[in-house]
Length: 270
Image (cartoon, rainbow, N blue to C red; front, top):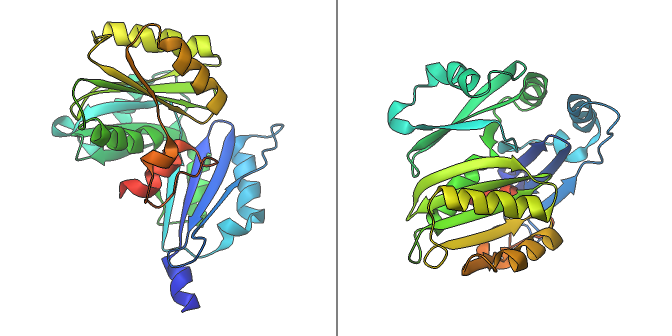
């Protein structure tokens, strides 16, 4: 029985520009989830921190049935599935990010949304993870959220914009009944930044202040709550999303400590 529980365990690793976190899921246990944020040493590189974590963190030294790696990066681009060819991902990435240092380029095909996400990650980070977890699957943060928000946008009338605040960035997603209209990431270190980019994109997309809706979620509760109150002066339908409602009766149970994009990865069924 114990061997089966170990075999069925999965590991999810989240990598962002200045942080690492890990989550394990063991079905059948009373407390199936374990989540941990790695204590980063900011005097050394992300690669060096990852190497240290792989050597010292017990969660990373077990056997898992499945390993997911989520890359929280603004360096991604979208391609319609009908025009996507995996042989061209390097060229597509270089076209979108010509000034990037050499990266490992990966992709996710989102069949439900009809697009592919092409994204880059540090080659050393990629190789370290692949050395320890040869069957690991790599996902862009944007991939899981496009699928998740796209499904949510099918319910209720009007077009919908979703704002996700994370680290020192924000990502905006807009949909018209499941069809993606827009996705992009912006640097946003203040509530004023969040409001500025949201209202500008809203205007550029021609969204309606009365009929369309904005949904806000973030990994900094105070910041998104303040934004929610301020932006209601400009838009009629503004909702501060409740994690416990989003993930009610689902695997992650609205764990407020876990980054929102990592929660969606665990329940999206990739």
